[in-house]
Image 1 (cartoon, rainbow, N blue to C red):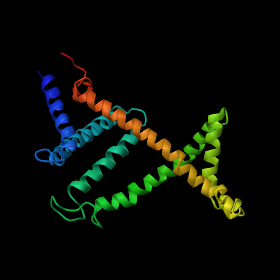
Image 2 (cartoon, one colour):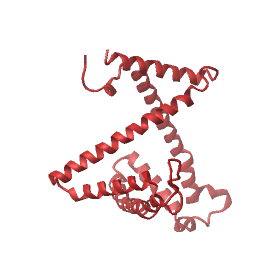
Image 3 (cartoon, rainbow, N blue to C red):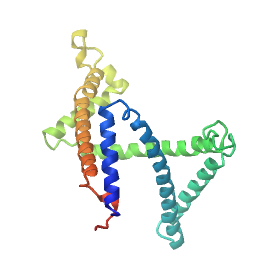
Image 4 (cartoon, rainbow, N blue to C red):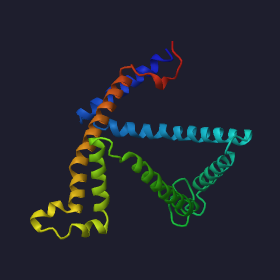
Length: 227
């Protein structure tokens, strides 16, 4: 019964939420909004468990002096400082309803002047990895790779002033051959078609997984033990 009760609850909640989408009337009309509140409450406890697990994992690495344990010290210290600044609202409006993002609060200062520059630095470093990966991927080994290489070259060139000037001499009847226009067409037609195909595939996968969970076929969320 320990596993049957969660399966029954999952089936009932999943079925009711699906029905509420197709019947936007009482008593189903507000069910989606009401359940979203409970989902937020559950997510809070998930955050607490995630924070505890982070402290446990990195605390164990620090205690046992695992490889790169100083990075764990930085992680734990950063997490602790941000948590204290957020819980006690240092420098901001006190009380449970205080605004964390109030200008001048410690949480906002740490976010703006520590986290944001670090995030920008990380993305700046990622540019070099993207360039390296592009060099390896965009090799004309076959027809498909050649098309990908040409499309990437046109898009990159179309985003630069040199690409704009390179074909600016073309007359108006041939303006569609200008590199910026070709880049825009690639992004809005073939690229958009590929994105929509991917989204349709993702939607079908989500529907299939949801049905497996609702019908009890997928039970991995219950743990590894079986009756």
